[in-house]
Image: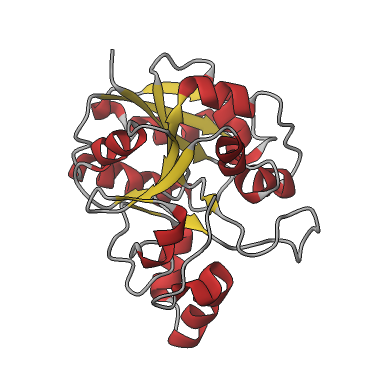
Length: 261
């Protein structure tokens, strides 16, 4: 059996799904995972069989397992529906916008997850709070692993996602960064969470602002990119500065470190 499952989501309702499929498939082919893995392509929201088959065909040389889910529960809901069909003990979830940026990326994440006491690792993390949208969100600094690309054990994925109804974007945001986020569930159980950089180094939350990953400097430490990292990369300096502020606040400054646990 493969060491890990890679779950990539393709949403046909997105107007630019072809771009996302090609970007991910090309990056997956170019950057060796470094570990034995099985690719699961989860398709949803396609208006026609022809378009769905076109998406699946791009992965034909990779021997994927194709799963189809409903399109009424956003990305997290699709992950929840898919995980019941997965046999591998470790599951790496990658959303529609994911782009692999370095060879050995999966191995680096697996090694980090297998460290004693580690519950969840991701390619990016953030301190951003959405409390301005809903008062239930924890205030800044709201530590959370972003769900654009993360690795957890299958048993945890099943347990943590099974009873979470998702009726809109707010519910999905809650799972990522709300008071009962995946990150906070692991922390309450006594586990650590980490961001894994391109070097393979796992960073615990106090060091996330200096990991060279999400919305930091030139993001040269990114292991997996996404639409948000690309938006930052292409933004003018004034916009970059604002994105850094809402993500890291004063913690981006040298010498100021988050009090953690």
